[in-house]
Image 1: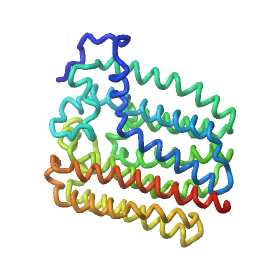
Image 2 (image 1 turned 30 degrees about the vertical axis):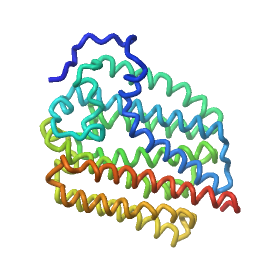
Image 3 (image 1 turned 30 degrees about the horizontal axis):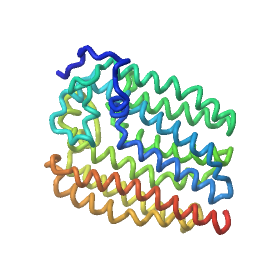
Length: 317
């Protein structure tokens, strides 16, 4: 067992440790989602208002950070991270700060509470500025971030973890658009789908190194439920669905045509799949495939954003 009871004073934790507890490397995904949402609104002639866009980005990143900290807290309580001897740090297995004795579970709980305490009033202030619908989106995001890890729902133990992650990051795109637009609209939801599927694939591939530990504590990830070979093909199916939806959306005039710039990330997804299929039963070799999976989602979101912002320069939808 990790050093959960180590005498670590919350007030003495340095900023560097507090930042490490949030798993900052993954927060870039949320920043990209915010940029994508703002770009959809801009393509439709709404903004971007720089200050509300920045506020959205900061709050969304803080929400993601809080969810990461909560996940580490609950994985420490249920023993998942203690049991994880095959994780590929820093990609899987949590921040490992509790297990290495740098912080306690109480430190982790306190940081999550502090982040949520900041989020709620700031989110309400932004909602006053931009529209009440943001309250519902924020509540949905907080609920999913909590329900993913925390009892009694513990969605990650019910085979719903990958779906929850994809849905959450789709909502971030919709929320960033809403802040600029002031109302809900179909186009941001449609654009968000391909990005959300590629983000979901990050959790899918991260499940391979963690599968043994996850199975021990009852986490029913796709890899635990269906085995590595089948899930490798599921990974390809999710990626193909993302790119196919992008093509179909443009064909049906749902997506703006410059969203096709997102196809530039397809080679990264395919290369990651080839590596995953080859090493599905040797998870220690999957670090390059995980990096490519993350890069594919980031590049997909940024490329679509660039295309949509270019459209805003020459005339909105």
